[in-house]
Image (tube, rainbow, N blue to C red):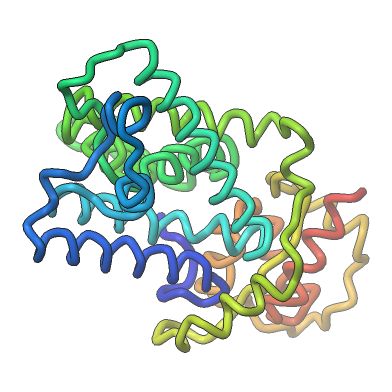
Length: 293
């Protein structure tokens, strides 16, 4: 399994967020202040520390956490491609704020002024992303290792488990808070999945990020309200009767993989590409419009 085309094509917000996490982590590491990162009861209720609040959103407290965290953030760029940069920005803001609210509640309940109870890093966003990953990304491959059955999603879950337990209780609590935030987003609390920023915000972010060095753009970022479920070939055929020539070229595997990574069924993706004469953008539009039928 992959997150679609390599690089950050159609994922400028992910790129900016990932770079910010790396820079904040390196900065505090060079300053020798990584051990001071994380939140405690005192940071919130006794002596409010603004710099810690900002650093907690971006900076990881150790190199292993940074490596696993950046890997997961990079993979989850598939959701920005799926719902569009604008709504993905809303998802980031919602996940960070709601998970932080739950973290503050946990600190208030535990009331330990001497301990740094919560580790630093974008745990809220990362673990909120596991909710749509579980429900909306289909398994495409099963295999066995030493008799144990794994799917192509297993390695993402293992990376998440490693990050969740990296600092034990200090990382476990933020991870659980992130999962709760992702669940509320999926439940569309306050109609959050319809919320959008003004277009100039995401336009500014797109201009702020430099051009990607990955594959050429192949799939458009879509502003969708909700998930992109699997589609059957019959739905596509019913919406778009076949107009392709009998000698149409078989869709390339990378184009099919691009659509599958966005959550579409493989057979439906192939059929849509045939109808669109292997134009990934047009095939995506066909699949999205089939959703309304």
